[in-house]
Amino acid sequence: MNAVTIFNTGIRQDSEERFCLNDLHRAAGGENRHRPSLWVENQQTRALAQEISKAGFPALVSNKGGKTPGVFAVRELVIAYAAWISPAFHVKVLQVFLAATSPARCSMQRTAPGYMGEAWFAILRHQAGCTMHRALARALQIHESTLSQVLNGSGYYGAGRCSTDRIARRVMRVFCAKQRIHPRQLSLV
Image 1 (cartoon, rainbow, N blue to C red):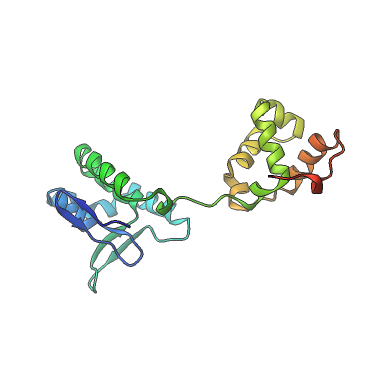
Image 2: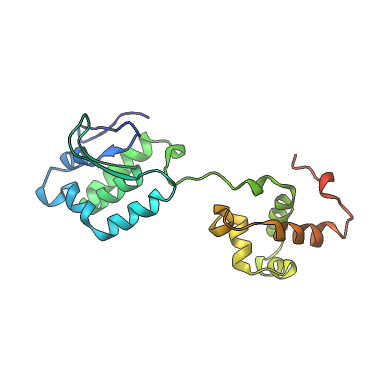
């Protein structure tokens, strides 16, 4: 990660690569009404931090004392904090962070569910590209929203809380039974 500087103010990072909102506050002019502690008290801020933290990594940490005192946040919250301060500062922070940080470091980015590498999913993805989703969902006898969640790796299917076995069997039955293709004959190459 490259060091981030905004308006000639270096933005420190903690050991988990979260950014110091106190440094951003200083870069924005240091007005008392823009203190990070006031922003953190906001109910919307707390809800946003909780949502981002669902990935299993604390998105917002307040250190009182020690080697790195201050409020530290992941880049999504840094951008939200900048927007809270002012539109001009928001634009500057967006420009700097988009130029200096890698999308792979985005704390909200998740890996694709394992089922997306299976043969039945390749068939489903292909059929989804050739067929209207409504018709495809009807052919598989599943709800359109279920089809959308499976294709996008979102919802209960993306989180692994819901099994795709039933859908996999239906895909194989509907699209492979006609051609008498056995799943082992399929290749994703």
